[in-house]
Length: 430
Image (cartoon, rainbow, N blue to C red):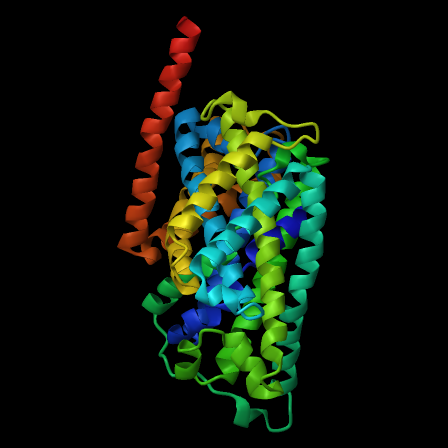
């Protein structure tokens, strides 16, 4: 279930759009994928090592708190928390966009589309209210289903590229190799890999977390990296670069090009399943992050309370309300517009958490607070150092606008923390 949470949350809707977004970078995109895969494996090593060394901690908030204190941990997770519920709103909008393939009425009635998106959000809130195990089984099933089209894309690519006249079907991109192009493509590719930390988020509810979370994190990250690398290369080689860059549905175009137009709706059905599975997983993460912040004093303690099934009911309801408000405010936006917002905010808002947890390993090592230091921990330290350098690399690559988003989100969390800390002091004094 933890592995499915990593794979299911990472392989979301973006996988069906990225080949077109990365097409202008040409073969630099494949180099960027290799860099991103290596960097994300180092980040995954950071979370895996933290879970193994501190199995009693409840995820990234506790890891950052160990090294930097409650204030820095809160601001870091505040950015992540905002990115999660905004991402959920965008996911719901995107799923409704693909539902319109089967229900054209959704295209002409914006409020009907908005109500449908909000209904999807609350459907998964209800599933998660039944407990992490129920949500976990939904994640396992949807993750298995969403891997079907990925396998089909890889099989189609292998069939065409290994055919007798494969050279006639291959269209190599003309974009020259450059460091700037690799840097830009890397920041986009990282957005697709967001979610590798998800196995560590519900750490307090995982059986044998010191063993389960590291394995799930590594396995999930490796599976996702290999899938992305393979399926990004297939359309890049088989569709002319200009045509791929202009495509709004690159995989549908790929299937239509070699198998016929009838496969478009079949692919749309799998896109919907992929989106629903991702929405389920991120709904779980949103509730768990809210509960974790409440446990550590960043949010009201009431948000940390659980129902009879062990689910943080109030946390799920709060994030459901906020995400629903985001949907209603943006119901007239297109799917592409929603994903543009998601890419900008999610990438910028996730980086502080990745950077904080990577630096936490280095800080705890320097303080001598790493339990059982040895060769394995030394490799973990090296991975944390590489993960830190990778985060700096991505901060440079994302550009000014996402950096401003990250600073704005961080700044917005500071007064919230100060206000709640002051309220707690007033309560204790009284």
